Image (cartoon, rainbow, N blue to C red):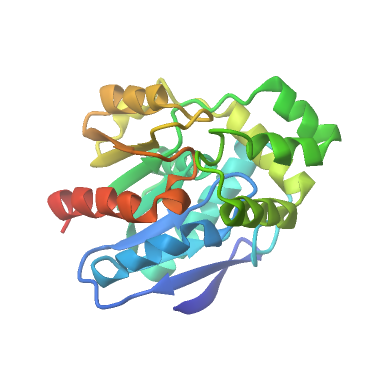
Amino acid sequence: METASVDHHGRETAYRYRDAGGEGPTVLCVHGSGGAHGVWRGQFRLASDYPTVALDLSGHGDSDDVDADAGYEALSAYVDDVVAVAEATDASVLVGNSLGGAVALTLALERDLDLDALVLAGTGAKLAVLSDLLNWLDDDFDRAVSFLHGEDKLFHADDERLVEGSKEAMYDAGQAVTRRDFLSCHTFDVRDEVGEISVPTLALVGEYDRLTPPSYHEYLAETMPDCELETVGDAAHLAMLERPAAFNEAVKSFLDRRVA
């Protein structure tokens, strides 16, 4: 696996890249709030068919931070990160989870990047955040992290390894960046616009996801002109980590039919 970075807009954005001989278009994975590229470690197995990239958004993982207010300004900066990495790696398929889905949708609506497909996983056209969680992100970060790792939030199964790794990534991002992420989700709403996105799209949701439930993905499938709906069983919000084989099979099946 290759570790690389790209300089753009006065900052450096880090990413990981793997090509195991895949002849399909390159897939670029975009993580969610308080996350980093490691959430996609199971998706690098797709690289034998589709070269796979996962980036760290600004302020996350190994990427430089950006001076941007929460909301549309931060979301636009994250879109800049994705565009820069997509252009550096020739990626034309975006896989976005949660905040990453909002970034992917904003990019598809506002930028000229040539896309072959979208996978919107654990996300929605509107991503309102529970007011209690926003308050805890302000003044009790430990409680916010604990809440997000409660039953059927980020994970369905009680897997200590996954939970501890996820908590570590969130603490690594830190309170300020994670709060910015969730506030940016809270203001995100493209329900009036997603019907304009004609790119082949897969709405992929964990069966037990309570943060972005199946109804969010049903809305995408009903509203977007070329959007399929698929469920990953026995998983919640981070289905790509919890059930990587099932997640990958859904993505591969979709891409094999639509873009290969």
